[in-house]
Amino acid sequence: MSRWLVPALVILLAIASTASLLAGTVWLRPHEVLAALGGVPTLTSLIVTEIRAPRIVLAILTGGILGLSGAVLQGLLRNPLAEPGLLGVSSGASLGAVIAIYYGFSAVSLIATPVFALVGALMTASVALALARGGGTLALILAGAAVSSIAAAGVSLALNLSPSPYAAYEIMTWLMGSLADRSWDHVRLAAPLIVAGAALLFATGRSLDALALGEAQAESLGVAVGGTRLLALLGTALGVGAATAVAGAIGFVGLIAPHIVRPLAGHSPARTLLPATLAGALIVVVADTITRLVRLTGPELRLGVLIGAVGAPFFLWLVLHVRRTAP
Image (tube, rainbow, N blue to C red):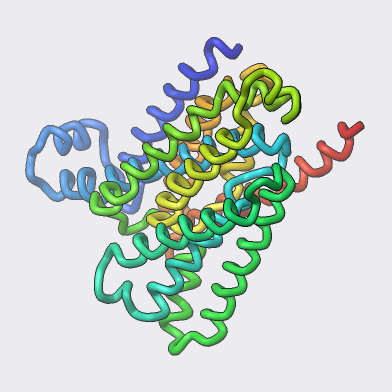
C-alpha cells in the first residue's frame, strides 16, 4: 500500500483542486476554466485566475506545511498529540496579526497583517528555542506551552481592550482562519518562506527514524539531536508562521494528517513526511471548497471553524485510542 500512497494522494489532490476551480457561488464548466486558463480576457478568466487560483495555491501550501510540520514534530517529540501549535508558532502569529489590526496597520497596507503575523511567529519560536536550550525535548514542549499561553493572553487582552466593535470583529474574523479574498500578493509573500520551511523539515527525515529509538540511541548512531531539533523548530517557524500569516489560525490539520497516512506508510517517521504533506494539502483544499458551498446564515463559513468542527472529534478519538493502547 505504501508504494501507491503518494501517487494516490497526488491524484486525489489534483481532483480536489480541479473541483475547487469549478465550485463556488458561480459554478463554472470545465471548458470555461480551460478557456480562462488559455488567457481569454473574460469575467470567467478573472474569477479563475485572480480569485480561485491563488486561493487553491494557498490552500495547498498551507495544508501541506501544516501536515508536514505535524509529522515532523510527532516524530521529533515522540508524541502522537504533537502539532505546530505546541511550540507557540500559531499563537505567536495570531498575536502579531492582532497587533497589526489593533493599531490600525492593517488599514494602511494589505500585507501588514501577514507581515506582523510572520514576525510574531518567528519571535515566539525564537523565545521557545532560547528557553529550551540544553534542556531536551521536555524543556522544548514546556517552553512552547509557556510562550503559547503568553501569546494567547495577549490576544485576549487585545480583544478585551479593543477600541471599537469593528476592530474586535476583524480580530475575531482573522482568528477563525480563512482563504477568502486572498490574492497572488499573499502567495508571493508566503510561498518562499513555506518552501524554505518545508526544505528544513524534510531534512530531518533520516534523523527522525533514529530518534524513534530514543535520544540516547540516536546520538550513539551519530545523529545530532540538537541540530535536528533546531531544524524542526526553524522549519516550523518559517513554514507554519508564513501559512498562519496569510490564512489565519487553522488548527488540527497538523494533528490529523500524519495519523491518517501513518498506518499506510509503514509507521516510519521519514516515510510519513511526504504523504502527510499531501494529506494536509488535500484536507485544506477540500475544506476550503466546502466553505464556499455551505452558507448557513449568509456569510461564508470560515475555514478554521469547519476544520475545527471535524478535528475536535478526531482529537478526542485519538486521546481515547492512545489511552487504550498505552502500556
